[in-house]
Image (cartoon, rainbow, N blue to C red; front, side, top):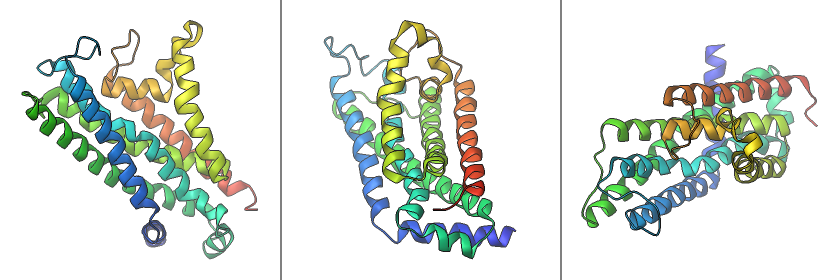
Length: 255
């Protein structure tokens, strides 16, 4: 099984790098995280912005956590990784070549988790470069150590987990456009609403967004999990999405 799975993972990487989609997603992720880091650094310490000053510990943690702005790209990467099979009608030959559908989905999960690691490394590097260079240009840059380094590492981990969640979501919904729209609506509409409504605000910390905030200290919310708890919760969401996506892909018809 190990040899078969390795072959399937390599096949998924070949599919991914045979198109230019991954380049666009990588560039988009870097631009997104880098732009937010630049804006944050530009307005740090401005009384009207409410952002902490450059020489404060809070600035460093918040600045490095901005790498998580690329989580939306990570989700889209994972969604495309599996829904492209249905969109381009290659799912049937793929599953005929490997009748054990579970192995195919597991291979996709592994392949895109590794791709997510690569994306996370590049995004975190870009975010770090912008924060350090721009911070130095403004007279003060945070140290890449201690809590700052921990936040950056958790931000990278979040990007990888969101990629896995994207694969699971794509396997659940099959339709590429529908899955991407559903992910965007949830990330930018549903979670913010749940966080802002008093009746549901208490449940927010148990959602993926709440877990992400706990991991990266993006907001000093009144009721967030501990950093390690947020990491475990988000990892749980990733594993649940992977399990459900695999289960459904194995049981339902391809067309």
